[in-house]
Length: 189
View 1: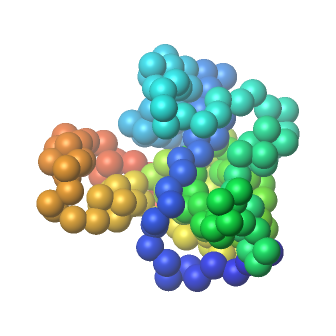
View 2: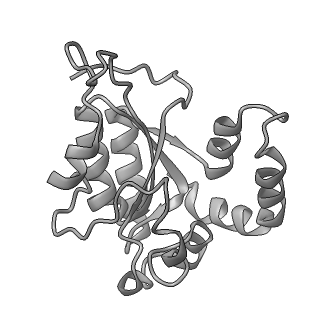
């Protein structure tokens, strides 16, 4: 296992969306999560395309199924790609449910494999709101970075001169009230 600095910036992002399904609409503040989309009607149009690497059904609580594990870059000393270059650890951004079960187990598996994990506080929930805070504290102690969706969006963009800046800035302004409501509900760790 490699150790990654928690002070690192996001350089190799991967988004993991965990179990946002119709049957979980009863989860604490679920409507506030839906601004990030869900795998029911809202996300279906986005589950294919050149940047989608997997859309996997699972019975494991962790998203690190054998299929996903095979897609992850190997990190650490002695691991290199077929071209001989060292594989960079992923900067995995996780949203979804339930924080204390699937999000926790996925995070721990990714950290164990040497990847950095960013959990969006306004993008994860649990059936019982109290479970969220307990899980987020545990995951922060384990090495995950707990942050917000807006923070991650602007970190990935990095510069107001970036071609995607106007679109992201517009999205942030457009969803300002929803984001404020989500942070009000979810930022209590």
